[in-house]
Image (cartoon, rainbow, N blue to C red; front, side):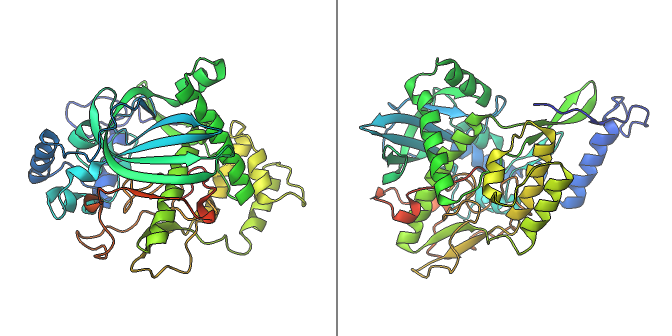
Length: 418
């Protein structure tokens, strides 16, 4: 969905660069100045690119060959940094979810130039005119990306669910995988709605809706906030919004299902990193009542905050505005590191209502990921700053970790919490 109204134009300004006569040049200059002011990294140093090229030419061997599984990816249509793929199947009366996460860390030598640069950059930054990637595109959009029809190293999760979508068994190991299809959200939604999706894709709705029901049961809250999109058109930038499709939510449920399993394993073994969020402070929900009134949204006194959120339609402008205001309740999220069996006093994420390692997917830039609703990104860390017993991505074990989950992780996840 595109909402017009904000169009950034500078048609009559003096171009700041010789030979650059496009009317958007002043805006581009302002964005460049902003990146300079914020100290945003520019190109990768030569030694980082050299190390990335060497790693891309000699990909690490995988512990297991899982290239026979027909994985598929679901991402925006222009994305090339494909970091997760899935395959869904029935298992008796329940389901089996296979979830592969691109093993970028397998290409990164601990303490090397790539490792140091990733710590310096912290996360990928997106601007209207360009993005500043965490890793060189040679890896993130090439050798380490789960592009279709090429083998790629991955961390492969296998999660068995019962008929209600509850997790009954978890297995994780390093493996070589091969995606068969690069899909986008609109295509996924259309195929499922028209009944033309093959079973592995059609099950995304069945499993996603089952996980959404468990989310309601658990008390988790999904904020279907419209995504901002910067569109360049006629030498101008326009700010639009895309309301999420149901397929967005189903995909997020699969991702966060895996996250709950990862959190459960870390808590069981007493070492890991969790994404935690305290409950909203006193008065925050009261302020939202006043916001709802100002936006002419009916919020009966007997209706809970969670019930109201689930009743809203992000396609409606006043509902979308209210959902955006609700992201204020997600501020204060942070990463909690624990080790040697010393569990922290707070292990849950208030919006998820369960433990989770990140708001996106387990171990995907796990020390640096900053989801859209975060108040601020985590501070950069020098190489080697993690506790010795908290392994970096590059030191993951290749052995299988398999166990049934505790009741805390039997149900999971909400859509894109911070």
